[in-house]
Amino acid sequence: LSSIRTLNRSSLRFIQESQLAKSLLHLDISNNSIEFVEALPPNAHVRIAFNKVKLRLAKGVLTQAFDEAFELDLRSTPLADFGEARQLFYAGKLKQTRFFGQTYEAKGYGCFSLDPGSTNVQIVSGDDFLPDKMCICLEGWFGNGTSCHRC
Image (cartoon, rainbow, N blue to C red; front, side, top):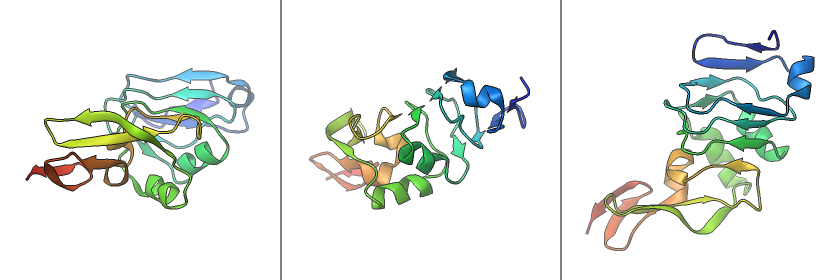
């Protein structure tokens, strides 16, 4: 497939103008070791869930996914860089669930998830996506985000 190029064994790039990228409906590259995604196909549901290494997205990819309502599944995929997610948070584009998506009692924190009614981007818990803004210490613990210690 000439429209999907592997830059190296762990990076993926789509040639946006290609017919395949324009007509692709679903791409599941879950359970891999993808380190970098340069771009997303414009009309596809992209699943990069359960990635085995931290994922780096090219600048603007995450913002585009939120702004254009891309269906992007990042469940249990830790981001390598939280900068763009943080910008989306401060811009008010990340709507959190009212209750924790995950609770880590042994580590003393809980994390909210993304409100599914506000975005097509899926995550399991904020600890992989934006831990300093989407996670808080549980009662009896103190700290910030996922850095919690017993009182």
